[in-house]
Picture 1 (cartoon, one colour):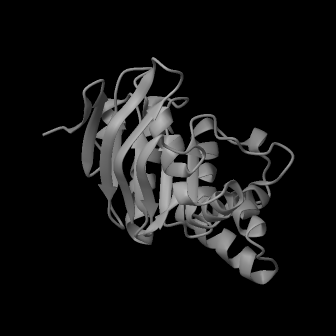
Picture 2: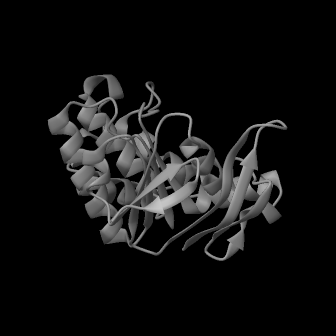
Length: 220
């Protein structure tokens, strides 16, 4: 599903952030990347998402080389095949829960009863089927993150990228969201990539990698 092949990225002449990093994630597999601040986790996530391109190496999503695409094509691929779960939720405050979840579907040209059915399905999956008409400000932090998970999965992406998704939650809410995210990824057979500082969050994944100056290593 996702193949990162010998990827390197530098900023300026003397600041190499990533050096020949390789990683593969299969459908239904959930992988964590840990590492100290400033080590390049966000850079790697941006390359995987097609928001940036490597200096060398390749990033392939469903066997499509992202660096070979122009900006517009990468945007279209990302919109169709990638879902995002952010630490800060990024819900639109003036839209209801249902309309927030519907956004990826609408951006992909879907409308009508098909969207309503899918929104209800994913909200039911995260335990919020009765909150579709609520506004984000009426939800708890844990509920908002559940909405963010539903939104990330609404368009049935091949790859879900989670960037510190529980960083703003209390321990109980964090544990609930992490369990839910894992269950939904497995159900949908989506590849999942979690970037986190939290050992508890990483422990919910299938494999944990440590990103350091000397490369990416699998924790045993």
